[in-house]
Image 1 (tube, rainbow, N blue to C red):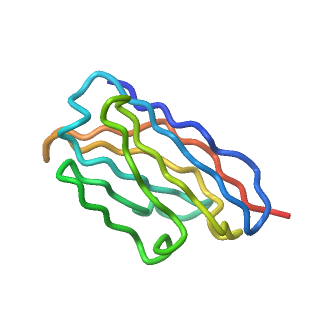
Image 2 (cartoon, rainbow, N blue to C red; image 1 turned 180 degrees about the vertical axis):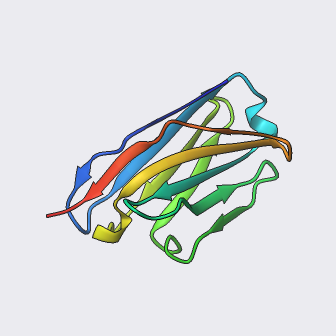
Length: 115
C-alpha cells in the first residue's frame, strides 16, 4: 500500500496550491479519502473528506477556500487550496479508510504560507 503526497510548496499569502495524493495497493474507488494537516506544535486536524459515495465535507477552516476531488481512474485524490493564509502552514497528509479497521496514511507534504 502506498499513499504519496506531492504539491507542497512555499507560497505567499493569498496564493494557491494543489496537493495530490497518488495511491496504490488498495481499492481506491471504494475508499473514503481525506486530507489532514498538522502544524508545528499542534495536533493533526482533519481538513476535508471525499467519500466513496461521492459526498464531500470540509472543516470550517477549509470551507469556501479548499476543494477536495478525486480521480478514481488514476487512484488519486487532490486538494485545491485557494486564498491561502499563514495559518494554513502545516504538513498535509492523505488518509484512506478502506474499512473501519483498515486505514492508511501518507508520509505528508509541507505547505508553507509566508511572505
